[in-house]
Length: 280
View 1 (cartoon, rainbow, N blue to C red):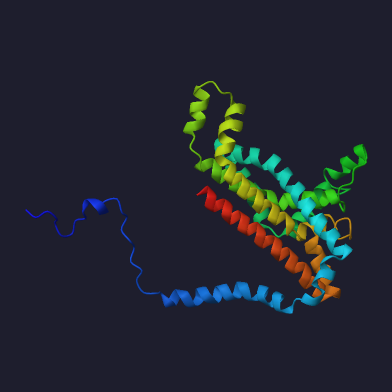
View 2 (cartoon, helix red, strand yellow):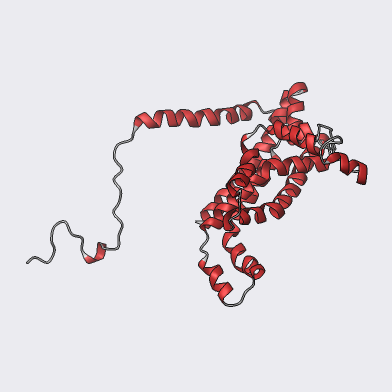
């Protein structure tokens, strides 16, 4: 009997996974794939080519631009914090509990992802407006008017962005190993301790990824904001609204504002991808 039989691997190669064969390039897929990449990249390349680079610094430091940028960054951050406070418990409820109508609640949570944002703005106006279902009582009892204020910007951003956080955290909760939670409960930890000391650390990468997505979506919100909060410079005019207004009177300024938003989005996506890589 020979020491090695053809077709069998020796002891040194038993732990190695077989290397996949590369094969030929499927050109029938490569051509439309390259066309798709060009379709997505060329508009951004057009902005870079047409950008007024000599006056870029002066345009970016314009007080109106800085006010819109600061309002966008601050309101998106506040909207993300509010989404975390409301969305993480909601995601836990959807992922870990059984109650009548759970599928219906999950469908309602995802509705802002598929409807046009301007429809969400109209819905918010009909509920929280001065004559809305809830807004009329806020105005009569507390003298509180929400539409066309910075608070309305935050509300519109939370409405359209929180579903991204809920979906991300719910997926992380469903994928977490519940044996650690059961072991902590067996050792005498109450539910609050299990949630804060065991569950949250396990799903922290999912919460971080969802928060970044939520912040990026809030930063780029346009339709619900202009409908519910209006477009008042220095008060409710965010960067997307400033781009829209600049496109009508000064296209070069619109390009500059768009590049600023593009840069912020690229940084957010790079951070998010690093979060996914570290989590995996």
